[in-house]
Image 1: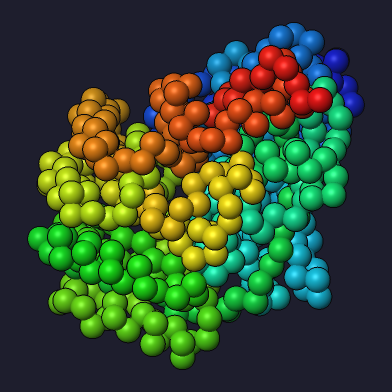
Image 2 (image 1 turned 30 degrees about the vertical axis):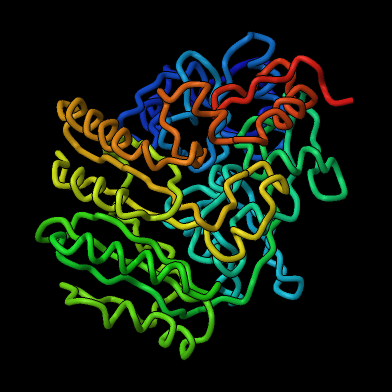
Length: 453
């Protein structure tokens, strides 16, 4: 039997507490390094349930965590001794193929979203791991294989419905509550619980040109220099990543790309990837768009231990290349990854103050140092390697970080770094919509002392 709480008698979803048989399963999140014990997990079915759960938590002064897909590296979708507002059962999506829009609930993962939109030959920028939830990725900014042509996920957000800390249901768009709309596009979960997102869609697929080429790890310096030059001249239709990855016979250096235009144009645009060097495996060619979206799924599975550090660097300089090559040679876990993701094309042409996401300079490259391991006893060595590798990159760092890559122990200064010059405006908007900082289990923006007039 599910937990019954008289104060939540009108709650339509399922309430789970420590007394329930499925409590451990219900509290589990993607990163196995996170092990927290909430007092109550409220599996919501809609906005009314969210309102009820928030009121219950506020009346008892309990911390509130909000869970969409639960894929957050820092484990911010759960908490100890508080209320988890769990949206994972809210998975409805409505696609308007004529208007090329989709309205989607926050429990969807990108693999589910893509299946629905690809049924109409449409897509929007969204993620590089299919298991990622649409909510967290969207609210943080949203890198993806379509970013060069169509911008980041937030650049394709038309509107959102959300429940504020005081229980109001608001629409955020360019026309309604535009300050809130600005803030949720990159400001993380600071401003409310989003119960639906409306996205622009674009003609993509069902088959694109994409995939990856895999080179011996010993060739990493040459491959990274090739990647640097190729990415600098690639057309908007191409988004291309490079990374140190585990392979079936040991680590490799890989270049993965997607071209979202015609197959003929894609073949020409990605031909240099196929002609460079002597790869151990070439998997670039026609690929279903949904396959491209899940290209990295096996590398970042659910249920293993993760510790990440990340930064932006100002281009892939020889110093960055040398530092990462040397660091990866010492990696303690064969599952760990270092990934380079550009801020490219359309994503780089949005002004840095147009949305809360500030990192728009086309010279920027996001560097993710992703440690993964299975044995809890290996945590020390992997965390130490991640931190040391991050430190070696600091001479090349720009003073910015992608908010969705922040780990739990990063601190307020790193949150400020994630939002950069937009932090003060975010704090003012926070003071309007969440003056008591109810939504603080996130990359938290503290409310400004003086709200916007």
